[in-house]
Length: 98
Image 1 (cartoon, rainbow, N blue to C red):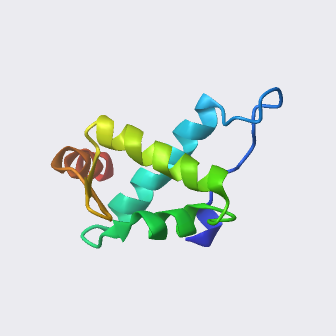
Image 2 (cartoon, rainbow, N blue to C red):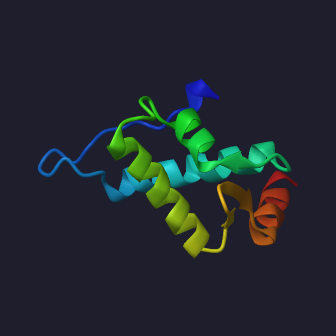
């Protein structure tokens, strides 16, 4: 999965990730979780898979932000350290593949 890392470009004026970058990372997180279901990822595993430098606070924060937004949208669940797709996300994934 190392080849599917999302780009880490920053808004030139503030150094903050753009909405587009956040959306790209959200798609990458959701795609990875769905592709490996029923296996479950920890937050640390997702960060390692999707970050160029998983120890860098900015990249860890980006993954946490993506998880927060996907959980808030009803597409992922967090159960302790684990992340898993909701039934709605699994159903959508099945329909998209049909």
